[in-house]
Length: 231
Image 1 (cartoon, rainbow, N blue to C red):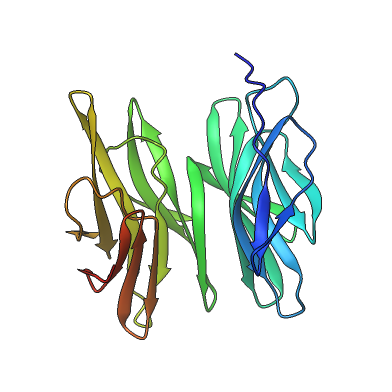
Image 2 (cartoon, rainbow, N blue to C red):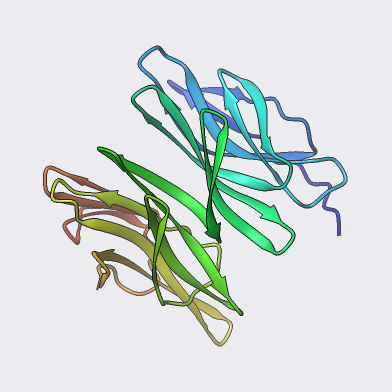
Protein backbone atom coordinates (compact mmCIF):
# COMPACT_ATOMS: atom_id res chain seq x y z
CA UNK A 1 0.00 0.00 0.00
CA UNK A 2 0.98 3.61 -0.51
CA UNK A 3 3.09 4.95 2.35
CA UNK A 4 2.71 8.69 2.83
CA UNK A 5 5.74 9.11 5.13
CA UNK A 6 8.34 11.65 4.00
CA UNK A 7 12.10 11.25 3.76
CA UNK A 8 14.02 14.35 2.72
CA UNK A 9 17.25 14.20 0.65
CA UNK A 10 20.06 16.43 1.88
CA UNK A 11 23.80 16.83 2.31
CA UNK A 12 26.07 18.69 4.69
CA UNK A 13 28.83 21.08 3.60
CA UNK A 14 31.20 22.05 6.40
CA UNK A 15 28.50 21.13 8.90
CA UNK A 16 25.78 23.16 7.19
CA UNK A 17 22.73 21.22 6.07
CA UNK A 18 21.52 21.61 2.47
CA UNK A 19 18.07 20.23 1.62
CA UNK A 20 17.55 19.07 -1.96
CA UNK A 21 14.31 19.72 -3.86
CA UNK A 22 12.19 16.75 -4.90
CA UNK A 23 8.93 16.22 -6.74
CA UNK A 24 7.31 13.29 -4.93
CA UNK A 25 6.21 12.53 -1.39
CA UNK A 26 9.59 11.12 -0.32
CA UNK A 27 13.15 11.03 -1.65
CA UNK A 28 16.64 9.66 -0.88
CA UNK A 29 20.18 10.85 -1.67
CA UNK A 30 22.67 7.96 -1.84
CA UNK A 31 25.95 9.22 -3.28
CA UNK A 32 27.76 12.52 -3.89
CA UNK A 33 30.70 13.65 -6.01
CA UNK A 34 32.22 17.06 -6.71
CA UNK A 35 34.26 17.88 -9.82
CA UNK A 36 37.26 20.20 -10.09
CA UNK A 37 34.98 23.11 -10.94
CA UNK A 38 32.95 22.73 -7.77
CA UNK A 39 29.90 21.21 -9.45
CA UNK A 40 27.95 18.95 -7.08
CA UNK A 41 26.46 15.69 -8.38
CA UNK A 42 24.16 13.54 -6.25
CA UNK A 43 22.50 10.20 -7.07
CA UNK A 44 19.22 9.11 -5.53
CA UNK A 45 15.57 8.26 -5.89
CA UNK A 46 12.26 10.10 -5.76
CA UNK A 47 8.91 8.52 -4.86
CA UNK A 48 6.04 10.09 -6.84
CA UNK A 49 3.02 11.17 -4.83
CA UNK A 50 0.65 8.24 -4.41
CA UNK A 51 3.29 5.60 -5.23
CA UNK A 52 5.59 3.28 -3.26
CA UNK A 53 7.82 2.76 -6.31
CA UNK A 54 10.82 5.06 -6.85
CA UNK A 55 12.03 6.90 -9.89
CA UNK A 56 15.78 7.13 -10.47
CA UNK A 57 16.91 10.71 -10.14
CA UNK A 58 19.95 12.91 -9.71
CA UNK A 59 20.75 16.42 -8.60
CA UNK A 60 23.27 18.65 -10.33
CA UNK A 61 24.05 21.78 -8.36
CA UNK A 62 20.78 21.42 -6.50
CA UNK A 63 18.54 20.92 -9.54
CA UNK A 64 16.72 17.58 -9.75
CA UNK A 65 16.63 15.53 -12.96
CA UNK A 66 14.68 12.29 -13.51
CA UNK A 67 16.78 9.54 -15.12
CA UNK A 68 13.98 7.00 -15.54
CA UNK A 69 10.37 6.55 -14.42
CA UNK A 70 10.98 3.46 -12.29
CA UNK A 71 14.25 2.61 -10.57
CA UNK A 72 17.04 4.14 -8.52
CA UNK A 73 20.41 5.82 -9.00
CA UNK A 74 22.69 4.40 -6.30
CA UNK A 75 26.08 5.87 -7.17
CA UNK A 76 27.59 8.85 -8.95
CA UNK A 77 31.05 8.47 -10.43
CA UNK A 78 33.20 11.05 -12.23
CA UNK A 79 35.86 10.18 -14.80
CA UNK A 80 37.74 12.52 -17.15
CA UNK A 81 34.89 15.02 -17.32
CA UNK A 82 32.20 12.37 -17.80
CA UNK A 83 29.42 11.90 -15.24
CA UNK A 84 28.09 8.41 -14.54
CA UNK A 85 25.01 7.55 -12.50
CA UNK A 86 24.81 3.86 -11.59
CA UNK A 87 21.60 2.04 -10.67
CA UNK A 88 18.75 0.11 -12.17
CA UNK A 89 15.53 0.54 -14.08
CA UNK A 90 12.45 -1.56 -13.34
CA UNK A 91 11.10 -3.17 -16.47
CA UNK A 92 8.21 -5.52 -17.21
CA UNK A 93 10.12 -8.69 -16.28
CA UNK A 94 12.20 -7.29 -13.43
CA UNK A 95 14.99 -4.84 -12.67
CA UNK A 96 17.76 -4.18 -15.16
CA UNK A 97 21.13 -2.97 -13.91
CA UNK A 98 22.36 0.02 -15.86
CA UNK A 99 24.32 3.24 -15.79
CA UNK A 100 23.81 6.63 -17.36
CA UNK A 101 26.86 8.33 -18.91
CA UNK A 102 26.19 12.02 -19.41
CA UNK A 103 22.48 11.16 -19.52
CA UNK A 104 22.70 8.24 -21.97
CA UNK A 105 21.70 4.85 -20.54
CA UNK A 106 23.67 1.62 -20.96
CA UNK A 107 21.85 -1.53 -19.85
CA UNK A 108 23.95 -4.31 -18.32
CA UNK A 109 21.50 -7.13 -17.58
CA UNK A 110 19.25 -8.49 -14.87
CA UNK A 111 19.76 -7.12 -11.38
CA UNK A 112 20.82 -3.99 -9.54
CA UNK A 113 23.97 -1.89 -9.95
CA UNK A 114 25.44 -0.19 -6.86
CA UNK A 115 29.02 0.88 -7.57
CA UNK A 116 31.48 1.65 -10.37
CA UNK A 117 35.19 1.97 -11.05
CA UNK A 118 36.90 2.96 -14.30
CA UNK A 119 40.52 1.95 -14.86
CA UNK A 120 41.95 3.02 -18.19
CA UNK A 121 39.44 1.91 -20.80
CA UNK A 122 37.85 -0.73 -18.55
CA UNK A 123 34.50 -0.08 -16.86
CA UNK A 124 33.66 -2.14 -13.77
CA UNK A 125 30.14 -2.09 -12.34
CA UNK A 126 29.31 -3.92 -9.10
CA UNK A 127 25.85 -5.13 -8.20
CA UNK A 128 23.40 -7.84 -7.27
CA UNK A 129 21.12 -10.36 -8.90
CA UNK A 130 18.32 -12.38 -7.33
CA UNK A 131 17.33 -16.01 -7.65
CA UNK A 132 14.13 -17.20 -5.98
CA UNK A 133 14.45 -15.82 -2.42
CA UNK A 134 18.23 -15.38 -2.47
CA UNK A 135 20.80 -12.97 -3.79
CA UNK A 136 24.10 -13.31 -5.61
CA UNK A 137 26.83 -10.73 -5.95
CA UNK A 138 28.20 -9.93 -9.37
CA UNK A 139 30.13 -7.41 -11.38
CA UNK A 140 30.33 -6.44 -15.01
CA UNK A 141 33.62 -5.68 -16.74
CA UNK A 142 32.96 -3.85 -19.99
CA UNK A 143 29.45 -5.30 -19.99
CA UNK A 144 30.49 -8.93 -19.38
CA UNK A 145 28.93 -10.44 -16.26
CA UNK A 146 30.84 -12.29 -13.54
CA UNK A 147 28.98 -13.55 -10.49
CA UNK A 148 29.52 -15.27 -7.15
CA UNK A 149 26.98 -17.71 -5.76
CA UNK A 150 26.21 -16.60 -2.24
CA UNK A 151 22.77 -15.92 -0.86
CA UNK A 152 21.65 -13.18 1.48
CA UNK A 153 18.91 -10.53 1.76
CA UNK A 154 18.78 -8.15 -1.16
CA UNK A 155 19.35 -4.95 0.84
CA UNK A 156 23.08 -5.62 1.34
CA UNK A 157 24.83 -3.56 -1.34
CA UNK A 158 28.24 -4.61 -2.69
CA UNK A 159 31.02 -2.08 -3.27
CA UNK A 160 34.13 -2.62 -5.35
CA UNK A 161 37.67 -1.45 -5.95
CA UNK A 162 40.52 -2.26 -8.35
CA UNK A 163 44.17 -2.23 -7.29
CA UNK A 164 47.21 -1.24 -9.34
CA UNK A 165 47.64 -4.86 -10.50
CA UNK A 166 44.13 -5.08 -11.86
CA UNK A 167 42.89 -7.29 -9.01
CA UNK A 168 39.16 -6.97 -8.39
CA UNK A 169 37.89 -6.54 -4.82
CA UNK A 170 34.24 -6.60 -3.76
CA UNK A 171 33.13 -5.90 -0.19
CA UNK A 172 29.80 -7.12 1.07
CA UNK A 173 27.89 -8.19 4.15
CA UNK A 174 26.64 -11.74 4.35
CA UNK A 175 23.58 -11.95 6.59
CA UNK A 176 21.12 -14.60 7.61
CA UNK A 177 18.52 -15.36 10.26
CA UNK A 178 18.92 -17.72 13.18
CA UNK A 179 15.48 -17.86 14.72
CA UNK A 180 14.34 -14.26 15.12
CA UNK A 181 17.87 -12.85 15.17
CA UNK A 182 19.80 -11.58 12.18
CA UNK A 183 23.46 -12.55 11.99
CA UNK A 184 25.86 -10.59 9.81
CA UNK A 185 29.47 -10.93 8.77
CA UNK A 186 31.71 -8.66 6.73
CA UNK A 187 33.50 -10.22 3.79
CA UNK A 188 35.26 -9.44 0.54
CA UNK A 189 36.31 -11.19 -2.61
CA UNK A 190 39.68 -10.81 -4.29
CA UNK A 191 39.46 -12.09 -7.85
CA UNK A 192 36.61 -14.37 -6.81
CA UNK A 193 38.27 -15.78 -3.67
CA UNK A 194 36.24 -15.12 -0.54
CA UNK A 195 37.75 -13.69 2.65
CA UNK A 196 36.04 -13.02 5.98
CA UNK A 197 37.50 -10.17 8.02
CA UNK A 198 35.06 -9.36 10.82
CA UNK A 199 33.49 -11.12 13.77
CA UNK A 200 29.89 -12.18 13.53
CA UNK A 201 27.13 -9.65 14.13
CA UNK A 202 29.23 -6.65 13.04
CA UNK A 203 27.00 -5.50 10.15
CA UNK A 204 29.92 -4.76 7.84
CA UNK A 205 31.06 -3.95 5.16
CA UNK A 206 29.68 -0.93 3.38
CA UNK A 207 32.64 0.28 1.30
CA UNK A 208 36.15 -0.69 0.17
CA UNK A 209 39.15 1.12 -1.29
CA UNK A 210 42.62 -0.11 -2.20
CA UNK A 211 45.18 2.67 -1.69
CA UNK A 212 48.94 2.14 -2.18
CA UNK A 213 48.47 -1.57 -1.73
CA UNK A 214 46.53 -1.20 1.54
CA UNK A 215 42.97 -2.45 1.81
CA UNK A 216 40.51 -0.17 3.62
CA UNK A 217 37.08 -1.55 4.45
CA UNK A 218 34.45 0.59 6.14
CA UNK A 219 31.69 -1.08 8.11
CA UNK A 220 28.85 0.00 10.32
CA UNK A 221 30.90 -0.91 13.37
CA UNK A 222 34.29 0.48 12.35
CA UNK A 223 37.17 0.60 9.89
CA UNK A 224 39.52 -2.23 8.94
CA UNK A 225 42.93 -1.73 7.32
CA UNK A 226 44.28 -4.96 5.85
CA UNK A 227 41.72 -6.88 7.94
CA UNK A 228 42.84 -5.25 11.23
CA UNK A 229 40.18 -3.16 13.06
CA UNK A 230 41.44 0.36 13.81
CA UNK A 231 38.35 1.64 15.64
